[in-house]
Amino acid sequence: MSQPFLKIEGLTKRYPGAGGKSDFTVFENLFFGIEKGEFACIIGHSGCGKTTILNVLAGLEAATEGVAVMDGREISGPSLERGVVFQSHALLPWLSALGNVAFGVRSRWPRWSAKQVEAHSTRYLEMVHLGAALHKKPAELSGGMKQRVGIARAFAIEPKMLLLDEPFGALDALTRGSIQDELLAIVQATHQTVFMITHDVDEAILLADKVLLMSNGPYARIAEIVEITIPRERTRATIHHDPQYYRIRNHLVDFLVNRSKTYANEERGRGDPLHPPIVRPGLEGSAQVVALAKAAAPVASPPLPSPAVRNRSN
Amino acid sequence: MKTERVWLAPVLSALFFAVFVGIWHLATVKPVGEVVVDPEYAALIGAAAATGGQSAMPGPGDVASTIWQHLRDPFYDRGTNDKGIGTQLVYSIGRVLTGFALAALVAIPLGFVIGMSPLVYKALDPFIQILKPISPLAWMPLALYTIKDSNISAVFVIFICSLWPMLVNTAFGVASVRKDWLNVARTLEVPRLRTAFRVILPAAAPTLMTGMRISIGIAWLVIVAAEMLVGGTGIGYFVWNEWNNLSITNIITAILFIGLVGMVLDSLLAQLTRAVTYKE
Image (cartoon, rainbow over all chains, first blue to last red; front, side):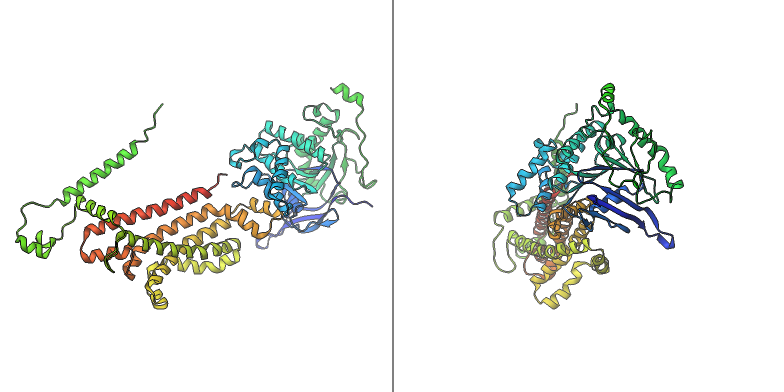
């Protein structure tokens, strides 16, 4: 049986209770996989442990139980094989944009000459359209530009997987849109494997191949995995014309607004945590939950919407 | 729009200075006709006798002429008790910088360790808390007894008093480096030593420099007292010597120079601090 590129098995995070109180379980028994080249988004309310999951994947935090395996090796600490884009951009303020990117590049390829490092770093900054701001300090850059530097820094080390912790959360809508476009283009060009936390449903639909929906914490779980069945060649300008778009969007919003709460209480203990239900809104009846996982573990690629339907919506 | 009058503050400063000098002058004006002693006797005994046994507080004019004399020849050396004010200041600055540099050599690496390890911090904290409030001069007898060299003892006192602000500030700066920045270094697999020099040091540098600035200020305060005790050379000894000579003009001159040198030392470190400060 083929293993997914990234495999999470029985991941659990508990914090010991203070003063004899019982332990506080943020999430437990998470199982999911991400294929090579896949873009996975995770959505859930605050407190369900999204950032903890990302930190475990980054190797910055240890899980209480369970393992995360990437490319056949267990994740036991931070590694250059996984690039992280932090929510607060986390640029070193005393270094220029170029210096920040070069800081990682030098660590990735210690034998490179200063010239090589600079050329490589410059290339990645130009990729996020910051070629004109190479020598500016983070304080001289706008919020969007800072986050672009953060993205360039993560991409420049050419990691096997990219971890993004709500990277656009602090940006205004217009800036967010343009950086989403850039990220989309880069990811489509490089076939980068990505795991991203987001609160923005539209962002998830635009970027992701699949969306992991988490129920509310404590005892948060992966409620279902939603496949984004819109073809990969997406653009922000046209994606909302796709007939699937609003079906998926409604399904996601529905989950966040209504079901994530009730799921935590009612459905806990029900279902199989090893195989969270995989959902394709719009293709298998509107927002209908179908447990496909047991039938066929590697899910076949979803059928594309017919061209006729697409033309009509344009 | 209101025009900025940048010249106003200096003009006001000059005015304050003029008022101060004026009051000083009026307060120290020598009353005419009070000389009751025989001029020959006065010449023999000195100025004190000439004014009826009281030592006169010098006026601004006297002090200005003394300053001018010192400035004209700051580095003369006419024996143990008669050295130029420049020479004495150079001795003092030398001691301060030596003690300060030694303290930095100890405080910065130790502060790094304390800041990075909560265990070491907890273990050393009681010692630091007890040693920190001790007046550096209280160490002087102990230093003289063990070191048996007055010059090195003075340097030791400077070392002790410069140590604590640098140590505490370095530890604090290192301990409060943003977790995000350390995580960046960790995810990029930056080696520990490189992280220390490329992330922690620049991040803690402004706090560290503030500690150094406090230290050099304290060191300059302490050196005068220390040199009064150990004697021999230095601006502190100069002040004490002139007190024995009852030369108030020289004491006032020395006070002025102590202030000027302190200001220069402080502004040098302030500039260094500005150089390592980053905007977030």
